[in-house]
Image: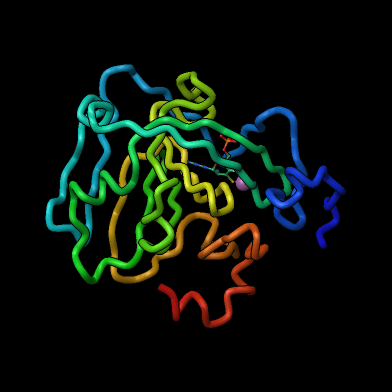
Length: 207
Ligand SMILES: Nc1nc2c(c(=O)[nH]1)N[C@H]1C(S)=C(S)[C@@H](COP(=O)(O)O)O[C@H]1N2
Ligand SMILES: [Mo]
């Protein structure tokens, strides 16, 4: 049990991972500056081990089938928020467009100003993973990732990369910004997978 663990009502207690606490307002958290979108284009590159490498214009991306999901968010520093409504394009739609090759097992998210994060393709290939531009029925604010961010609800929130510029498919695990600084490659909040030293052989074995 983490130091922040409190007793929550039964209806929600099972949704709060060990060591997390609920916050009422949505924090802003990132390293480095907030980019400004000029309102015209924010290309998204789908690259690496794919049959159809492509760069989608912002307009093309927004024209793809949209999805709306309801998800919880858990930051490794300890805060969680429940029932966030996100709108965007499903990762699976992008995957079908670029067609990762059979050897692709990892996805590296690239962001403005060089932030990266990576996850197994297995973790990304879920129906609640999306590239989003709206939250709570409103366009994202600049500080929450406008005009584009990744949302991976079942992993700690550093994997939900803001100001996303590309998704790169790879055969090997190249650790991202926080992953090289000692954070966990898989990062499942309910397993409290916070730190790299907890990985054991798992990073090698899976996926
Ligand atoms: N580009 C970028 N994305 C990022 C980060 C960052 O430093 N740079 N920080 C991550 C972390 S640690 C968290 S907890 C979430 C926070 O998202 P929020 O500011 O919208 O709450 O963004 C993630 N995405
Ligand atoms: Mo975080």
